[in-house]
Length: 164
Length: 164
Image 1 (cartoon, each protein chain N blue to C red):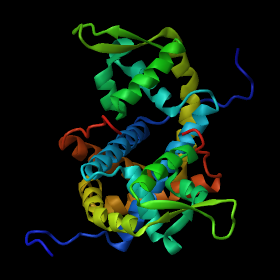
Image 2: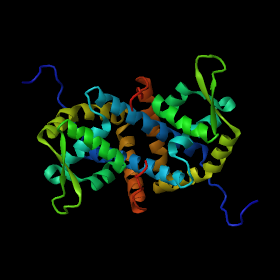
Image 3: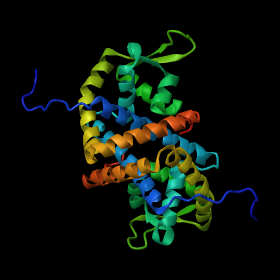
Image 4: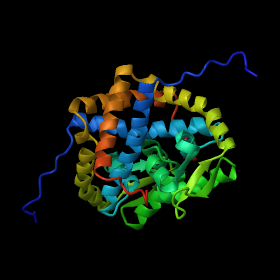
């Protein structure tokens, strides 16, 4: 029944399990809380993230593929969100400046205004729901730990988001 | 133009901003990586979470509403996932034992077997993608910080997930 070369399971210790559960539920609750706060101002978190990324990009434009990697969304989900943002007049789709086969998303003036209008609401929400719930030392360590994790996952190759 | 009682924006410091960005991108990458690893064994992360929660519940059954709160999913998304799990024969829907108006999700024997089959794959994935990417001290602090955040968000009332 058993295969010879199978390593025994490396279960988490009870303390690791507790930390992992706290991370998992906490991260989901945070996402829901940030989304709720933005939605009460008429924008979804996934929408805000996209216009916010565009507002910081050179020329306020990014390739769809690069944007999908940055926000770690599937291309199909990003396409849906982009269509909603386009209807609002916040973004427009254009051919890539350098490669006519690609598509870029460009932030409009109205989109830029929306980012500026929402930024304060969002940052207050980030403060209330995460930064202010822990000590400054905890937040700094969390940031360093998440950066190490991010870099390790990226070093292993970007997870495919095609079906997430 | 300005309103009298508006507090000035409390923007994040550059160090806080960096930590926040690391958290945001890291958490999305982790979710995608965990999902990819489970999907290569034929199950989505959202599906695994549900059968895993059920396997730990008394009588291996939970009310849909309680389960939605635990996994922080909208009722509509949970209903879709539960329908897929039911087709596979891993769960069945039943009237609540205590309150006939409510609906409970019950893990079947085959569902329990699926949890046990997947657990090792998932925990290896958790180790590789988060636990082993940071020092034990960082992971412990991250756990404590996320627990503090989770409790603060819950104390403010569970964010509504009806449209997330």
